[in-house]
Length: 111
Image 1 (tube, one colour):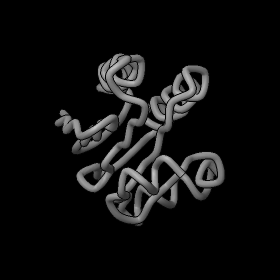
Image 2 (tube, rainbow, N blue to C red):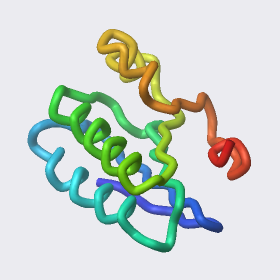
Image 3 (cartoon, helix red, strand yellow):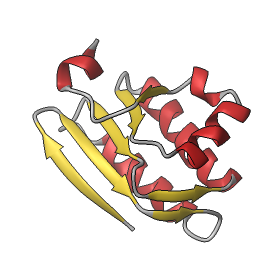
Image 4 (spheres, one colour):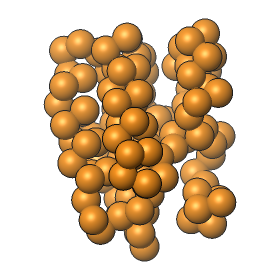
């Protein structure tokens, strides 16, 4: 379902396929464990391999953002396809999330 890459104090999670009610709980748990880790101050999600997202999938990211804010951690998304990005735009969540077009540098995330 996903791969994880850690570098410096940042980790990148790359889910793939469809994020929906069938697999949202597993991804939510994995992201919560990652953002709660004391090893990293930033969590980025590489959305380039995500084909679709339903409301349950969207809630995974809202929950992760809420947890990250509570823990004073950075959380961002990048590489979102146009078909998935429109979901964030229609729900106006693109105004809430830090969304990068491409893989951001560590400095950009920290800013």
